Length: 115
Length: 113
Image (cartoon, rainbow over all chains, first blue to last red; front, side, top):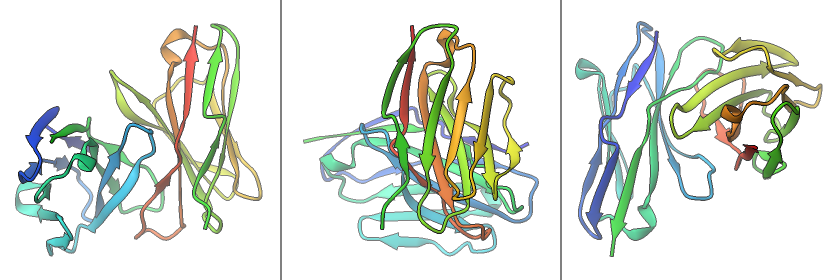
């Protein structure tokens, strides 16, 4: 069975602080995909990044960066110099490498960035 | 390019009634999946459709069903509504390729009273 754990339920920071959201996953698949989604109050899940199991290269996109480590089954997300607009619930998700498209989500981390 | 469209956005139903939710995927996407989001259980997979066939189903009772049409639009139906069915129902669409991400609609907020 697949499982995604986001141990941090809520995080509160002050604007311009750096913040890291943790994600630990469990799967028996050798091929799998990891995702991060952002959910603002409007409800829509906004795709942020996809990472394949065979690509451990870290990625940076503007103020966002992701650290994928297969050895520890972690896929952590860092926001540098946080802004109020970053306030949202962030979800980490896992999908197996098969043809079926089913995402297993973590419980989410509510990030509040205070001015 | 239009995103995933879900209708209606909000719905209030009475216990025992049934409800149908609709999802129009992004043009060209043939895989549509549905998720239920509640404060207690979080985001849970309901089912996935591809080419009008259900490929995968989550752990939900038979009261939850769905279908997909030839134009890839999908509907999900919940019969004999219970208070616990109150949730945000999210639809996601994706290409058929394995190495791809899913794009979500804004969801339908269902309240059962």
